[in-house]
Amino acid sequence: MAGRPGAMVVMDVESGAILAAHNLGGAGQRADRPGSTLKPFVLDALLESGKLDPNQRLICRRKFRIGSVEMDCTHPASVTELDAEDAIAYSCNTYVATVALRLNAAALAELFRRAGLDSPTGLIENEALGHIGVPANQQELRLEALGDRGIEVTPIELLEAYRQLALRKRSGELGADTPVFKGLEDSVAFGMAHAADIDGMTIGGKTGTAASADTPRTHGFFVGYAPAEKPEIVLVVLLEQGRGMDAAAVAQPVFAAFARERR
Image (cartoon, rainbow, N blue to C red; front, side, top):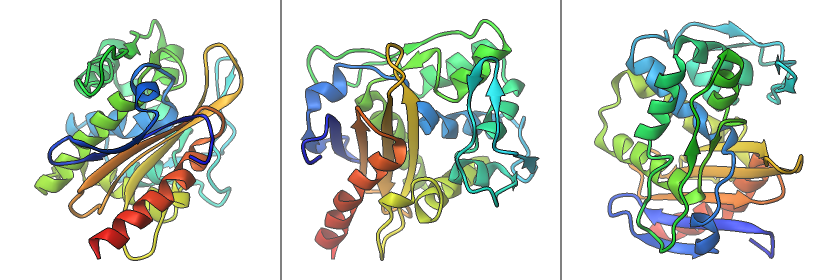
C-alpha cells in the first residue's frame, strides 16, 4: 500500500481463511459505494433468469447521463458495440444501466442481498454492515446497479461475494453465467483492470470507482481472484483516494508474488 490510505485483504478461496491483510479493521468497519464491482452480479442475475441474451450487442457512445448524474463510460473510444462479456471487460455503464431496467427494484436489491453485500462475514469483531436500498424509480435503479447510489458495502463483504464467484468457477459448472466469468478475465487481460495483469497467470477481476456520499473525491476498488482457471486466492483492495485502475495496480504485485510462490 506504500502508505496510501485504504485496505487490502487476501483470502484463501476454498477455506475462506485470511492469508494476509493491511488495515483489516478498516476493511470491515467502513462501508463505501462499490462502483462497478457490482456489474458482474447484475449481469449474472439477468443471464440466469433468461432476461439477457449474452450475444446481444448494444451501442455505447461513451457520453452517458442518468438524470443529473454524469456516468460517462471511460473505455476506449474504439469500443462502440458491446455484448455481455465486453460489458464486464470494459465496464460499460451504458450497457449495464440499460439492461438493468429489465429488473424491478425489489429484484435488484434482492440479488445484492443474495450476494451477501449487507451480511456479516464473521471475519472481524465489531464488523460494520453494508446498506442496500430499494430504488424508488428507474433513475435510482440504474444508479444502484452501477454501484454509484443507494448501496454501500464493506471491503470484506465485497471480498466474500467475489470468493463465492471464485468457488463457482472452481466448480466448473457455469452455464449461462459463463460470459460474466470470461468478462472478468478479459477485464484484467486487456480491459479496465489491466493494471493487475501479470505474465504467466490468468486473473479474473473487476475495478470500481465511486465518489463518497460526503465528498466528490473518488475512491477505488479492485476485487479479483487467481488463477482464473481454478481460483486459489481472492483479494480486495480499497484506495480511499484514487480510482479502480489505481487499486488494480496495487493488487498486481500481490498476484505476481503469488505466482512466484506457486512456481
